Image (cartoon, rainbow, N blue to C red; front, side, top):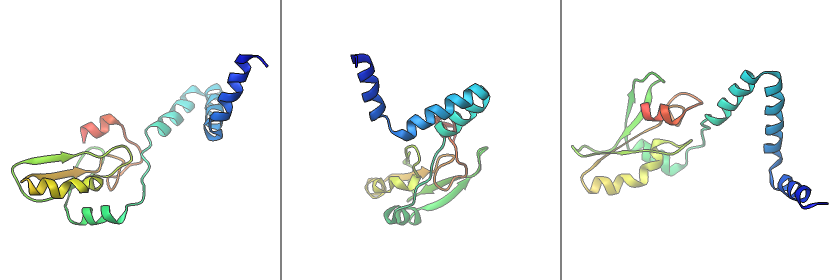
Length: 139
């Protein structure tokens, strides 16, 4: 076995079978219809799966004032803690939720800030199953 085929064999072993299966199905779909394959890739890439809410996040969410902000992507779930002229916007990551930032709330309140967080489109309590950095920015 030459070094090139040995490297390919080692590479295949390291690549998870689900990823190899996905690559194969997308190649077959692209042969049938590149548009179909493109839509599939788009749905996979921009999917924002929702995860169960831990107890600590539930407490942080329940301690906030909830505000539903109308938006073209659907109502944006927004959370506000305290009252102040100095507002701090807390942003979550992909597949996250605003209340995940709850650990920052008490220290910010103690310093006189009003923490505000929101669930980006397709995340947390904001409707949708897909999002993008552009949708998050718009929200």
